[in-house]
Length: 83
Image (cartoon, rainbow, N blue to C red; front, top):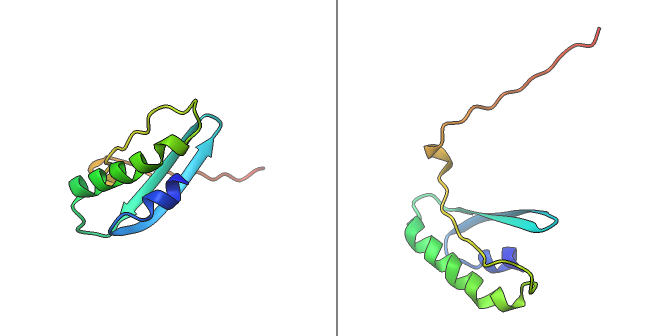
């Protein structure tokens, strides 16, 4: 439900989600050049429309902006030979 709703926001490129017991993270990827301040507002507004349909025990949804190019990261691949 949240993924489908978020997917209706203007300039969405991709929506993905990862859910475990008690928590769900929905990631929205936008087309390059999208104003993320306005995009975050749009996502919040869309989610507000469906909040009453979420489970009663669910906490208030949180919308965070995240720019992966501003985070220092390293991808490490390790392999080994047995024997």
